[in-house]
Image (cartoon, rainbow, N blue to C red; front, side, top):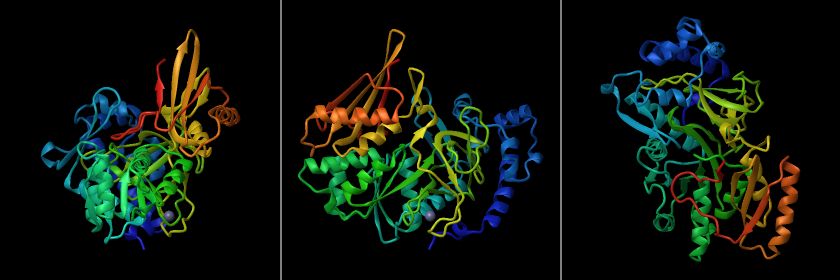
Length: 428
Ligand SMILES: [Zn+2]
């Protein structure tokens, strides 16, 4: 059973809907946003040239720089009076990206979040503890509205506040927890420190997102809390959380709500669209947004698309779990390194906790890569031998050897209680 019929519409029906909505979106953006009018004129594309989603690659890309250049609200396609909500996405540097919603946009957001929660296994009788940050960040209110739309009960705890978080999980018997994957593990650790067993919680599902993570990391979370961990994806520039989610039935890729968001995967270097199944950068075009239509937004997230039918009966395309960002790519002594490769090694070795950091420095002309990992509490071998094992595994995976590899005590690395975890420190 799906939350809405659209989720299992035939590919033909869906395609016809996308064709119409894309043409409307392009016309709307062209007429109302000077940035898009200029960009399309410059590319020599008229809204009349866009008749179906096959024409989408004629459109120019939109980037985060475009949001920056048009700060605060130059990307908006409606007058202020029509807005009902404004959020902002955290920029790591400089000004945030400001995003706005009309009443209809908020309705779409609630709908896609309710669908997402339902696909994750949330039922109207469930209690959902929402540990995403409230405020300008879209995570908190996005989940909040979706839970209410679905008819379930939301506890708006927000980010951090770990002691209260644990009390609520126990005392209010939350069925579902939504938070970042790193916070999920932090909570489990914090419970163990208090002499509590996280497996004893009534929790059945955690919905994790807002940070890239690998499959071994997910398994670690499922094991630590004895739950099903479902991956949710979204970004403020497109709408917030709820762009796509895994179904709990298959846990095999995230269904993109294609009637509202049109996904492509492109080569991050050349921008050329890639065939189904090949990994590249996710690009999304909004199909129903009023306040902030977005044409071919370069998300920076690396993924694949799979149009094969899913066991759950949903017909909507699935994107792979995002394990890294195009701009996460580290170039160390001329060799490409993704932090997710290192994470996989760490989480695969049972003796190592899923906590690590990578420091990159410049030593004269040479790059230095320093990796620090924590060993697991239950580990009782010598750290020296563990180091050897990690070195060996890293050699198999990476073409570049870390200059130092330090194995430290459990809890020695700093934890992230609020916001997104930081694992790479590039001092170069
Ligand atoms: Zn499915």
